[in-house]
Length: 80
Ligand SMILES: [Zn+2]
Ligand SMILES: [Zn+2]
Image 1 (cartoon, rainbow, N blue to C red):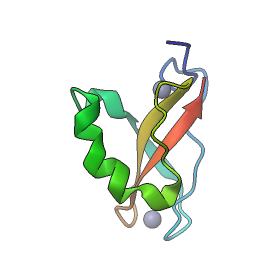
Image 2: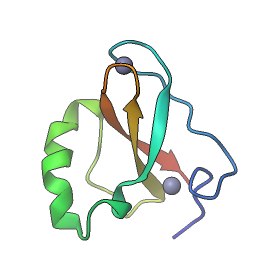
Image 3: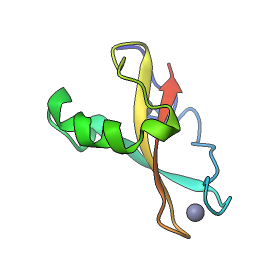
Image 4: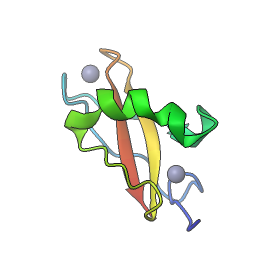
């Protein structure tokens, strides 16, 4: 897998909450929460509106980001 700048601390997650507009906080890679791809499915379906695609194998690192203000959770694909 290529190097993800967020995982490696080169960059900070920069994203804003789609609900309240506040800054989102990186909660780490999705892989750290789930053991295998089948476990992604519920999230994949939930987050469909965020453009969360099926092609994880591409050089993108899916991160879970959370809004500390309203609790909104979003998956962001980080280009590696
Ligand atoms: Zn990453
Ligand atoms: Zn929010």
